[in-house]
Image (cartoon, rainbow, N blue to C red; front, top):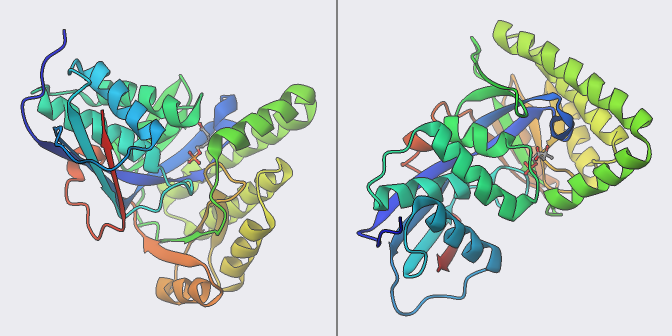
Length: 316
Ligand code: PMV
């Protein structure tokens, strides 16, 4: 049933990092992900007259989200603000998808269970990423730290110690769909080489779950380093990402690796010391970097997004 848009509604959702297991997760192995304290906020209003032109995929996302919500897809205006860097593997499309679904549900007076939000957001994620594993929309919907196995399980993890992160942004944006497709081609041509690497990543994830549960950060850091080496072997890293990881380790980070699709994008560094100093070292070397903490709440509790840098606007 199509209902007309009654009122303005706003929702925010956090970005995310993949701590271990990206790419292998596409092939059924486990991965660990966590939401971070950076947000995307969507405001939906009835369409106003003068609107900036809409990027095509954003336009498509809004139309599809309206359709999933049962709202008349024409006549909507959505504005998007974020303090989360976009197109660098920090879950901006998942945060946008989840916030859009929640905002439209509010407009329609629907109270959605998290699993419905997650399923609908997955449909929007496909517009941005083709055939994603679902890890991004899942962690962003539920929030906190999760272990994810595609189509099998989602487990919430807890840790006795916070995981202090520094995130540094490379100069080259990443294109997840391209990276996933390139690996798929290599895997199809030579399964015997790639499957054991995925198994090794899966084993690292299992050990990392134990390290997180015990709060042993040096072990978690070493596992992240090992994961980065395996991602290098998969051809996912770049010279720039390797240089950033090297900088972090030389500066005393417990571990560092690329996060997300690779081929560009961001690195995450696990710290036990002065995060400001590592941020400064990245900045000094010409990379944007910031300290980040795990956001315990998912999209429902993320309405206080702050310090927005990115601005976009969409209409359908
Ligand atoms: O969207 P990104 O760059 O955070 O990458 C998601 C992780 C991948 O494993 C590379 C893809 C997927 O769908 O799981």
